[in-house]
Amino acid sequence: MEPSWWLSAVVLVLPMYFANSTAMLFGGSTPLDLGYKAWDRRPWLGKGKTFKGTFFGVFFGTLSAVIISYLVPQTTAQMTPNYVLLGFLVSVGAIVGDIAKSFAKRRMNFDSGAEVFGLDQLDFLAGGLIFGWLLFQPTWEQILFLAVLSIIVHKVANVIAFRAKLKNVPW
Image (cartoon, rainbow, N blue to C red; front, side, top):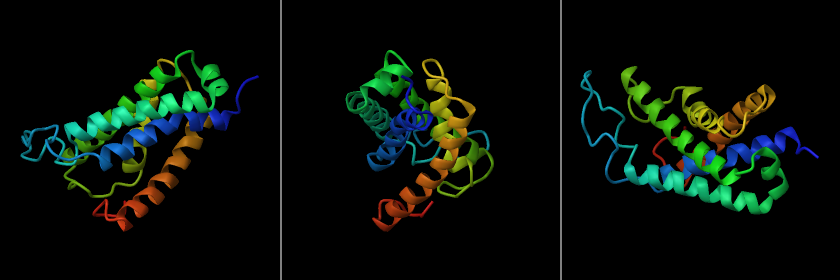
């Protein structure tokens, strides 16, 4: 029996959510761009993208996949024979997507922390889907569902993080 399309979609996106949020929560210290400026004299990525955040994002995203594989083993097994590897791939993809967004925002002259609707909410999802495509290909309905869900979850999570003083801006 095949799992429902929405359950597979949620199980696919959860490691991305954990990777993206824990990278922010546990980030800090040395920036990935080491403070160097690009040809346009703007930071390559900015101080918000750090080695520590990258490591912990991928670590906790992958750890969430291990836990999810135990909580819903039939769903994960029907998605792919190695869901933990899928969780690792989508976690790496989520972080790479967020890093690519930061690079693009710097090139478009947006300051670090400036909101760009769509790009800020879907960067990690796009990266995760691209990297995870090797092991699981979601349907277009699942991708659309995850895009809408991610916009809503991103907004709610960022408002909570802002109110908890974990972020300087509510987006």
